[in-house]
Amino acid sequence: MTTQPIHSDPQPIPRTQNAVAAALPAAQRMEFYREMGEATPETIGEVLTNWWLLVQVAGDPQTVRTAAAVKAGTAPGRSASTVMRELRELRELRERGR
Image: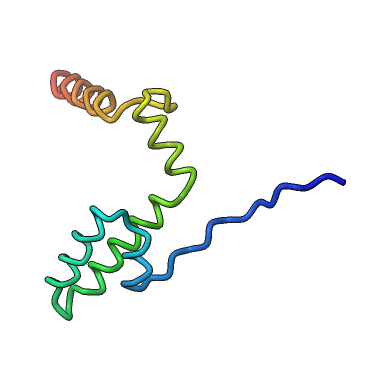
C-alpha cells in the first residue's frame, strides 16, 4: 500500500486580535500590542487589518519562496532600481525631444 500526499491550503488566520498575535513572532507581537493599545476607536480596525494582512502574506508559501528568490537575486524580472533608472532615462529622452 502506498500513501498519497495530502495537499491542503494553509488555514486562513481569523481576523481577531488573539489570532493575529499568536501568528506573530515574539519580537513583532510586542509592536502589535503597542499599536493596538495606542489605537483609537476610529483606528483600531485599521491597525488590526494591517497586522492581519501582514501575517496572511507572511504565512503564504509562495510569498516566502518569492522573498527568498528576491534576496538571493534569482527572482525573475528586473529590480525596481533598474526600472526606475530606465523610466528616468526615458523621461529625459522625451524632454530632450521636445
